[in-house]
Length: 239
Image (cartoon, rainbow, N blue to C red; front, top):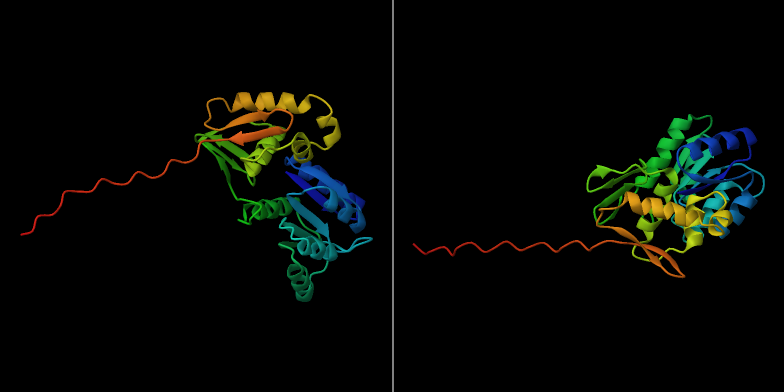
């Protein structure tokens, strides 16, 4: 899962970047609103963490810009502004949640997990494919109810494939959501190596990863069987 973090305080930005990466996220961290807008126009993100006050475009204006474009990406605002009017302005602009500085990292991570569970059109709370189940909030994957031991990179790849199924996902899209440097991943056999390992761990699942030569990869799984109608009972005899 790829996040955009926009925070002008270099110390806080560094702390956030390290903590989010340790939690399994791919992070683009920028120091001002103008760069945040440029990144938002170039990449697809699974969530945004935006400081309200920063050089260039303010965070609340980035929220408005994203919503005008029809972006449904979850947005968490960071700010020292704690008045009711400020909270109302941020939420009315389109932010999904609001965290007042100073805050504990554990709370920020919990709020991001909560945003990931919200059933918006572009972000399902739990992803399924056949007997596979992936919870983006807890970073857990299961096959037929049994936990899968996946690396952070493998979880990111599986999440993108689950979200896009049954569409084909090209190599660059996989790289954007699972690697810091997508160009390095696309230009080598790194993606193929990780997919080979992921396929091995999914062995025995009803879902499988297919290679579409020259295009990319897709996750395919059997459709759920329709319910079997109950047999009609014996007709009642009239007394």
